[in-house]
Image 1 (cartoon, one colour):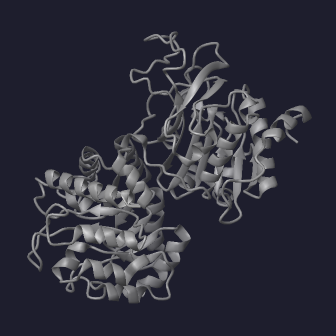
Image 2: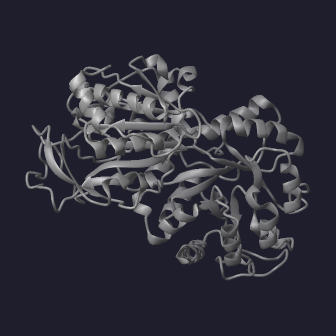
Image 3: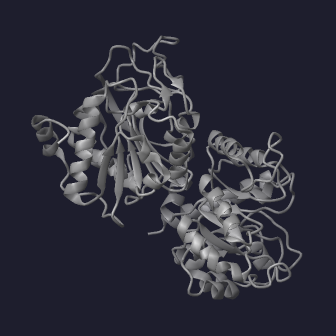
Length: 549
């Protein structure tokens, strides 16, 4: 036992009897307890470790491995875990570049990361104020720093539920909650464009009168947005953070402990919850979350611009998703190269930071060429995991599918078989052809239909959905001004492409594509108003779908 009997009895009294979610498979959680040059959270760290360990043991939700050894972040050691709990860590917990890279890629490829309280200054050089030692970590977590009212280790606040219907907040019963702790206030890189806020300071019910502009503690925010806890995705990774936990009483409170344990099940992958950043939460976006749909821009729409400019245009349209492109487009003026697996780690970092600054994720990526040999193909998949890609869109040769199926399951990246016309895609242009190639292969191989090419070849998109069904992995959606080979893009719902009927058919079959991508291949430099109309059409349609009983 890591703690004394009296403290354990207080924790045991409030420890949930069962987990909210049944594990999909045996889970392992690494609880990392190392602090550097600071030991003020020791009691809380030990209480949290013991609470999590005993809960996992009692319910079978996970096996907790507790360690202070940085070698746990060697790639072969880290690979055995489903999630990492950085338990109130302060300072440069480990400095080796390779171990930091391993943790980064563990998250971007789909692992879980949990942090509480002092984790917001993990990987800093500890002094006051802390000195940044790994900038990207603050973006992964969603915040940096530990600014709080001087001398207030137990500041009384009232917490409001920022998103009362969110599943992780069920324990609070849609009611605000009184708390006292060392309360952090975050500035950049914290942003509602990147995180789904769960708890915040209720500024109407909490005394903030001591906050002064320019004070030494720098607690004041002009927007009065004092977030306390949130979830997010970084790449494919699942991240949960709460700033509460300076002292161990957070693990002795029934509701807070349940909240933290549910958060652990989220990062482990057993409790799916919505993570769309709070800044995007319109009624239409909530409807799309219910449907399991994500609307984004396919970069080919903006291939006349750099990828960085495409990101900016996507942000201007108010969309949180973009699809990457391997050819016909330079990354930026400073990176005048194609966006592909040949970029170095610093260049990929610059791209991740550009996406992060815009509040945009890249779940799909069009790979024009699939390498012929396995080693080169693995380099493409490693690149995909560094960028958090969920689905590659590509047009491989039939003989490459065995290798792609193998790597798709190993790297957990789907393969969407893309169709151009019969001249370019002689073995992929009809849905029946794609379905035949998927036979006897895993569900990670499927279709990435381009509706524009279907429509130009006289293929009815509604019938195509009925043929492919759950083999549809991701979609590049178009509507055309007329049927046949001369049709060009028009805003969705204004052409001959049966856009509304297509979305209804997807819903009937419960198809949840990686992304429903707008690929507008017309009026290259004047497409923004048309894209806005397509977005409005999609929003209206999804609201109608979720309004039906």
